[in-house]
Length: 359
Ligand code: AMP
Ligand code: MG
Image (tube, rainbow, N blue to C red; front, top):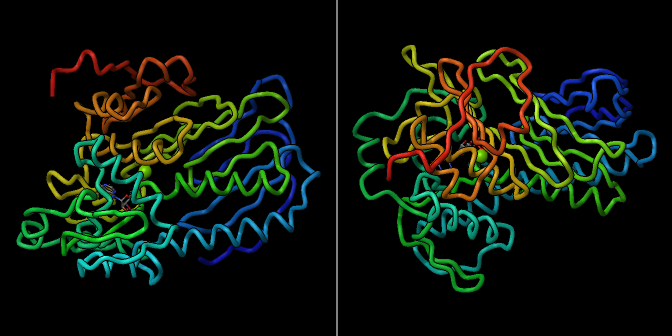
């Protein structure tokens, strides 16, 4: 991980951009926005923006150094293609011999296994080889897409999270192609750990925002945190939602890592059924108090697509979700509909799983 020049400092009143598409808006139009301190880091391939309330009371240099070190550690532990503990675990899983797993990855393996089962395999972090074949295991994603024969081989009896046997801390892989890639859920754990560390450093009110995926702790001046939801096609704000303490808001979108190939957008969320970038939705946003679930669920809804996303939200126990379609239409669950305030004219409709045909 490299760290951008330190940027501690107090931010002024008014609207401000929480980087990469998330906007923190004044919680109440006629009240001045609370003064906050901001720190910016670079980790997980994105800017991590930390907002602290109130301004002027925290030891910013200490927080910057300790949180920076923690983010760097997590980045190293869970990186899908740089050498590190995950790469070593992947080598051993592929060999099929039992080994002691580093504790740092056990929690993610456990969550990934549970999420794979809940999503019927749409969310499958064992498919690292498939993600790599599309050119996403490199800092700058690039084509060409995999040749049809390569894709066919990868899709014939592909590895699953369930192919990892676990006995305490000992793991054994049962599939030679199994390659863990925690890109779809690790940011969830990272923002939670970041907030835990801030709490240990005496911070009570904060947001840790990793490129638009964020979690809150406490409240600014006893008000809500008001967060903008990005319009995937314009990089402007579609609407906003108020978050209380301990809420995570995660978005998966086709505008994130990707490249153009023969006029088609190839992005990093891969549908295991086709082996290709997911089609049908341009973004999926999930609000939940479990950040790992919010992260994985946003990715899953992107894969589930325009017809099936409400069913998958229900399977995952997600009540607050919103998706965008290629024509700009927004679809949302009833529970989030009452919390979203659109910032401009948007065609929207409410979807529920009950109304869906049986799977
Ligand atoms: P997100 O931005 O949270 O939607 O995560 C996208 C990342 O998840 C990709 O860069 C891959 O690392 C990983 N990923 C892609 N497809 C899948 C999938 N079907 N299941 C689980 N993780 C995936
Ligand atoms: Mg995700």
